[in-house]
Length: 544
Image (cartoon, rainbow, N blue to C red):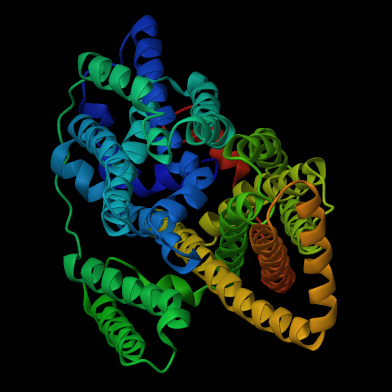
């Protein structure tokens, strides 16, 4: 949530905040806090919807007969929908107004969450998650802007801190409570985790949200948005399904061709449009390019690790959903605390120090995760999770600041929107890459283990024979004892192959992180600091 705050404000400010001077006076102090409590309750609802699903993925895989290459769309479908729509939030806000857009986004998110719990197959679940992503974007963006407009400059820092705190409750409480519901009831119950706060927010929000006049409606490049959505989705489908169907399959080649054609169409449209969806001239800035590349790669590795760790803990190490959620929770707390501190300190010193520290922490966490084995303790897993989530706290605010300082002030909205697209695409590609790596390496390790045990057939026979004799001594019949011995051996080999596959995936993620350290160090802030200007503006109408 932390990296979204500066980006969200810049995305919507040009079209959503310019009318502030002509709107009614700000609400009184008491009503402001009622409004803040209502908006923050809605943000908690959105955070639960975003983060609690991770611990339920193994159970969903079992219930719907899915594998890693399919189940990742439950996560990436949400990310794609939210990423593609985010740059258009300024136009949507001017079309409907903050109040109506926020209520629409929150209502659709709640309905889509309920539908996720009622999904009858994997395809329907992915569809409802996409709807969740489409509605979560306006609810998150406009919720922040409503709070921004309601409070005077001297209190906006406190409100931003509360907004970040509400967002951090998702990865902190969501996996823990969601894991308990999945373990004790069903994966479907996890989607209903946010219903209490959702119902409360839906009842109170219409009563406390002020009605404001809508600003003039800006133009939007609908064809640019459509062409971008087509090439992104086609490319991701090709990457995620290539391992299953074969990279030479006609369907995969067709998807790559569609992605290539619509990418070219997208570039031509954006170069010819008077008001393009993406201003490609911003890529003439070297600082903007290297900072965006670093953000893309970091988010790709971070979200891939999030996805793989949640699966690995339950699939390969057989932790319960509740236990897995408890191991994930401390990292979210540390991430929130470190993020707030790094954001403040980066304004006073070279932010590249924090960025480099974050990348090194992430590489270290990936290296340690690549060395896990059957003997690895839950405590060590928790330490690794804390390390890579701490890295996000170190990187996201300083790197976002460099990206936004790399564009001209009049193009801040576009630069911020592109930063959101880079990070969102990084998240999606990272999850797709992680699932592909695990699937491919699992097949390779299973074949290798099978060949090894064929060569050691006498050792296998001895192991199963000894296990059979032990079970027979416990009163079990020979055929049943031999069947259970073979099943136990196969389970052990499968678990060994799974752990080896995850190890290989984390090795690749570690290498990507170290490579991404190069553009991260090249992404320096401008020599002339804008911090004094920002502090001066914080007394007016700028984000503190």
